[in-house]
Image (cartoon, rainbow over all chains, first blue to last red; front, side, top):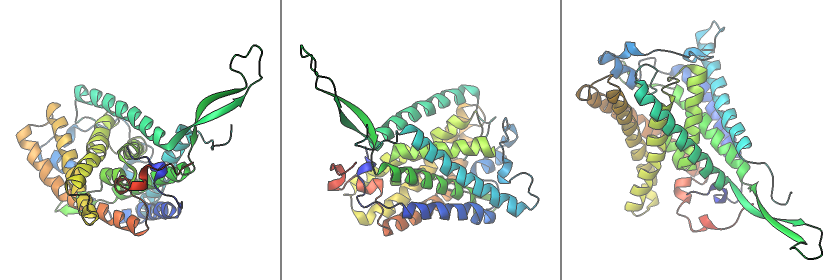
Length: 108
Length: 254
C-alpha cells in the first residue's frame, strides 16, 4: 500500500495549483477543439444497431457539456468545462475534508 | 466509453452497482489509513484512592498528517485534470473519436485506491451534472474505468515494473504501455457487460470494441506519458515510483 503521507518531505502545493489552472484552461479552452464524432463505444453501438436503445433518465444540469442559457455555443462549452472542472476539484477536496478529521497532532 | 442507460440489463447493472460500492468503501478505508496516523493521547485524570489506574489515561485518536493537506490538493487537482482532459475528444479515424480515461494516470500518481476515488468522483459528476454516462449504468462505468482501468492498471504496472527489474528508464514506457492496455481492458469489460445483457453478440461486438479502443489507447498512452514527464520533471513523487524508495517507509511525518 502506498502510504502517501510519507512521499515528500519538502512540501509544496505549487505543482498541484498549476495542474488545477492547466485543467481549467483545458476545460475552458482546449475542449472547444474536441472532435464531435461519436466516441469508440457510440461508434460500435451505431455499427451494431443498438445505439437507439440508449435512454436518458437524467439529462443533468448541464446537458451535452453546454451551459444552458448561453447562446454562443463556444462560450457555453467553455463555461461548462470550467464549471465541471471546478466541480470535480471541489467534490474531491470537500470529500477529503469530510473524510479526514482536520486535527493536527498535538491538539486534543 | 461511458455506457448510457438502456444498453445494459438491470441484471447486469445491479450487481455492478454493488461491486462499485463495495470497492468504494474499501478504497475510502485504505486511503484514510494512509492519510492519517494514529497517535497516543494522554489524558490527565484525577488520582484516586484506592488506585484504579488513574493518573494518566492513554488512548489513541486519528490525526491528519501535515502532508495530508497537500494530498487533498493532489487528489482534487488530478481529478480536475482528468475531467477536463476527458472533454477533449481526439479523432482516431474517420467518424470516430476517443478521449482520455485517466485510470492509470490517477493510479500511478496517487496509488490505486485514491485513484479509484478520483475516477468515481469524475464519473459521478459526469453522470449527475452532465448526463454523460447513465445513472443506472454508473456502477458499470465505475467498474470499467475505476476497477479495471485504475486498480487493475496499478497492479499490472507494478507486476511489469518488478518483472523488468524496476529500471527507471523503463518507467515511462511501461506507464504508457499499461495505459494503452487499460483502455483495451476497460473496453473488453464493457463489451462483456453488453454481451451478458443480451444487447449484442460476442462475435459481433468484441473485435470492434477492442479494435477501436486499441487506437484510442494510443492517445491514452501519450497523455499519460506526457503528464508523468512533467510531474517527474517537477520532482514530484509519483506513488508508483516512490513505492520502491528506501525512505518510503520511514517515520518522517506528522
